[in-house]
Length: 227
Image 1 (cartoon, rainbow, N blue to C red):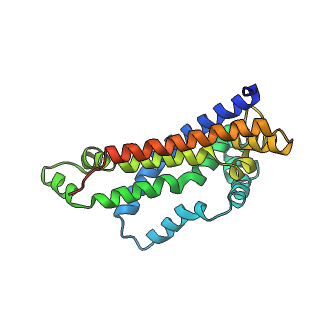
Image 2: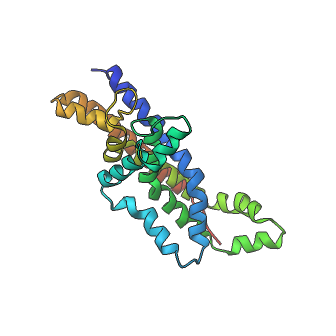
Image 3: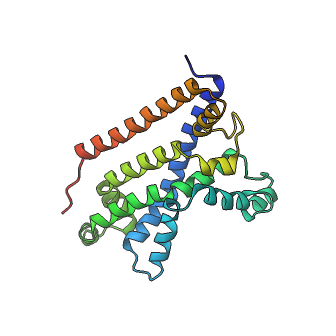
């Protein structure tokens, strides 16, 4: 038995959502993780707690408040409407925003850990060679933290694949527009279509396991020994 066109649309939408979310989180999460690893600000603990909040907060709670923020009466939704883009709720853009918020700790924490492990000595050595702070980051920090980047990318991507509560609250269940694979599985189970649910669940299980196996193998092969 093959996948239906609606299931295929949900699959491609999920992969697209995961890819866009990871790219966005790398752009936003990398400087945040670097600041957290280097800063001694007294408010650092508060920021770390806010970043880690999605790990313990029920997805429906996060999704509910994001729905209020992205809706036509919310601050982000009102801003989007003022710019002529319409409401962000029940759109792919809204799904990206929600996914980025929910997967934030899965990208920031591995990067923060990798940056902290590097220490200050490589940066001090680069500084004695008159390298600027920007040069130090791109030529020293990023290569040494490549395992952290790899882990962040894989965890962020895999976590987005399995999202349910947040995307359901923000995007609803619109086939071809906001219906991701986890919601499609739920639909099949709810209508007692267990064969279709097995196909999608098995495919998602195999994909997630393959991704994690790949990152463990690459981390072992390209392990970095820090001075």
